[in-house]
Length: 388
Ligand SMILES: Cc1cc2nc3c(=O)[nH]c(=O)nc-3n(C[C@H](O)[C@H](O)[C@H](O)COP(=O)(O)OP(=O)(O)OC[C@H]3O[C@@H](n4cnc5c(N)ncnc54)[C@H](O)[C@@H]3O)c2cc1C
Image (cartoon, rainbow, N blue to C red; front, side, top):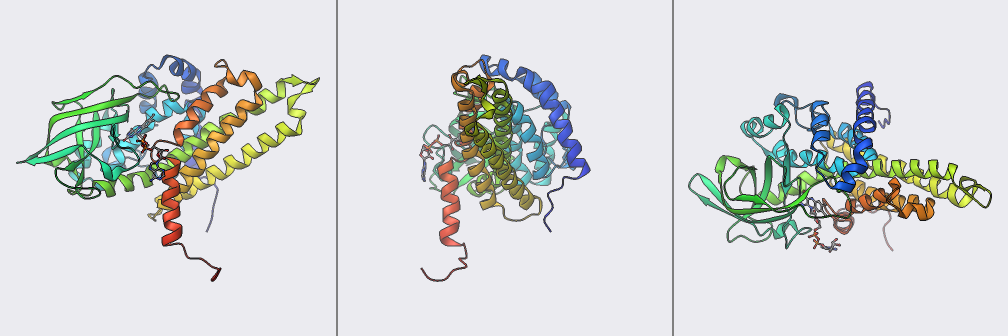
């Protein structure tokens, strides 16, 4: 059965998220974007409102929401500010490997602290020499007695400067490619762990992006998540669960771009009439709306598969690919509707344009999503037509 109706609980959650986004995020979105200051106060209020750590199961203090509920909340937040949303929902990315492969005891030790008090957790696969090619992790872990010693550098780590905890991927010395990669829960206070200055960015300026340096960081072996050598699989499984949220973020940003374009075109006059009278403008906003509907449906389909325990790998990649490509296009079109004013920072569409670009890059670039989808098409997809 296909059902596009939200439940009463989902509708109430959307209203709660929308109220928070409009009341607490939108009014400060520009301030944090221009200053690059970390929006800790907003995040703390989101935590108190129960709008963070969405997927952490109830036994560990979280709301235990499914992927659909996460997508609903994330869309609302991103419609107000994609940068603050990135900061807020990196906790989902950091917690997911523990939810997926942590033991009950690890979930108690690592997830409960995230739900008891406001805490941040970051996720670190990327390195100065590697981003797309996760099998190429260079950071090293060496087992010494009852602990592992970690060495290496992690790059582009969201909330890196502010995180209380990290999930860090490193490989066992001497292993190559997919074999030997491990994931560790690492507290910020671990001796030998330090972070660099925030990296200045084009967009999502309200989110912190940093370098994490590991110099002989000793981690108890009980902090290994899953088994030795399953880190690559864990990273891919994590992305399967989190990529729909990027589709949801892209949908939220695109929705705002559409609304700004409608509002502006109804006010701005050219050739002695509102520009909304021009069919060229009407068709731009019609295309935006149709694409946003498609983005949301792909996102919800991937989320639905996850919530039903099905393999959502291809659906997640489709949701992220279409969501991020269309968000970039819609933000560009919205800027065009504003004409020259769209190019000024005084108007919100310039920020949407800058923010949209990141969706095509993090959690696997658009090229990587196409690679995932095309591999499926050439290796598994069953054609209905025989012959050429
Ligand atoms: C603001 C921001 C926040 C981020 N947050 C995090 C985080 O919290 N944690 C984390 O671990 N990482 C994070 N990242 C890193 C992000 O995931 C990587 O930047 C991304 O995966 C791309 O890796 P790269 O930058 O090394 O590009 P590269 O992998 O060097 O790719 C360069 C170009 O080559 C293309 N390319 C690479 N391989 C292929 C291929 N096989 N086929 C076709 N094209 C290919 C890419 O699509 C891209 O266009 C963040 C990045 C940014 C910008």
